[in-house]
Image (cartoon, rainbow, N blue to C red; front, side):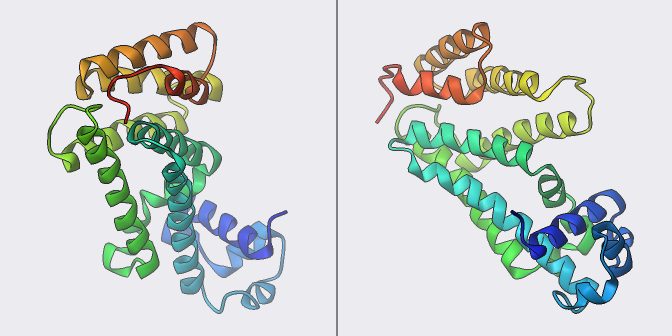
Length: 229
């Protein structure tokens, strides 16, 4: 069960995403939660404190999801898990996901809480590290890891953003399959041929079986790939 703090932050996030900085006030937040404004002041002394807390929380939760990828035993598994947990965060916390990408517009980059900017920098480096070790193990074609990581991020974020806006007109299960197939198409250009071919076989099998990202990952982890190390 969500704590009162979590309820406050989620409600504040929704107001920020919908109305920007002007959309958040202690009065509106209290109305959203069905409580009195004085009740909120027992948790946060001002709107500014709520703002800092909710942005920091969004970045922290995102980082917690991605860092679960270190459970992977090999570079290839860690790379796949990073994509899986990125998608999981985006679908399970859509308001936090949206806030991550508008926080700098709402608050200004220099006004972001240090915790948020620290998490953002660490997350960016985490993604670059997964790409770098993917190149080192022979999964990805050689190149500048920062550029490749940004390319993958831009592709994933683009798909998620379009889906969240309702422009695909598909349900979540269909979107998961779209995300899987589209990611494979991207990897055809970024990965070494052997890995791209193995991934393609697994994706096609998963799509034919009506499976999604997680099942395709399971198939891939069982498939023998020479680059795996």
